[in-house]
Image (cartoon, rainbow, N blue to C red; front, side):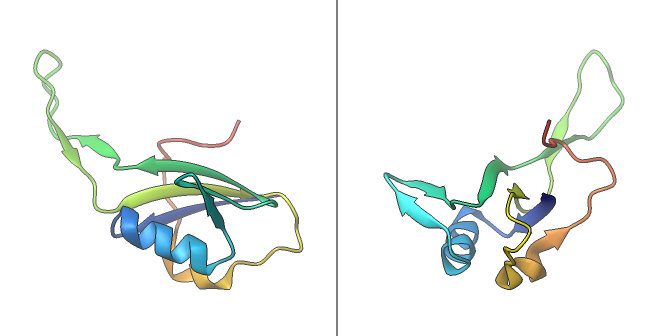
Length: 93
């Protein structure tokens, strides 16, 4: 198994690139037989340190986590979208 973090510019680009990489769409949902998909979407970061009145700002991009179950699967078209966050917002359990 391999876990990969992806960042696209928006949801449309995500759909386009995942479909191009072998994902299929059914009833508006994307799936792949050998890949688990976690669409995180927009990630927000704390913009200040005021505990009584916190403010958040949206980070750039549309975020997706994938877990490749079959080690023989390669998704080379997704390579330009791979990111390595220092502190991921969500991870696989």
